[in-house]
Image (cartoon, rainbow, N blue to C red; front, side, top):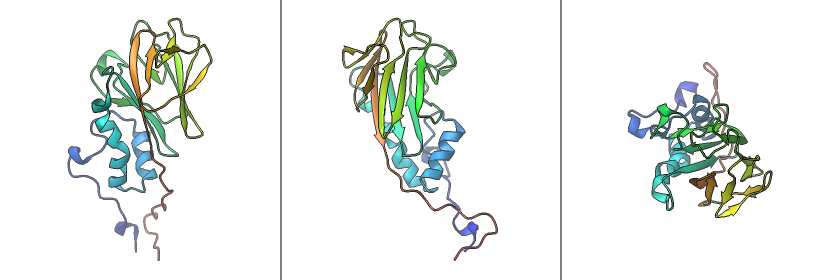
Length: 191
């Protein structure tokens, strides 16, 4: 069998493409597709929570959706990163921690006056997402309780975060994907 026999079949329309609703860095989509063994149905399963996150919002329309597949971790949000992104859903780069703040150097830049330039960190360690305030001026709250500077709080699906006066709902989705067999290189025959 040659690699021509195992090529993934890509969607014929943008409505079949699981990233069609999210502005996504190419590294995220490529890594997730590889993690899923180039199986579009698996990719759709991983991205399904992103498509339904607005339905889950109970307190505010602002959200951060965390996605973890064991190897690929990223955040999807509708929070405004720049004037050009108003109303868009976008994904962060793959990382194990994301700095949240008003400054453009932050992984999760949010244009809101009550948010400090460097406000908080959302991280992922040992299968758990967490939040820590990095000494913000207006504070960070989880479910109504203020975090002290440097305090680390393990996040749970459905937590309500307040950065300064901005309310955000936090959702997470973890999919442990078994490592896939790498696709053979062009011209390589497999048995």
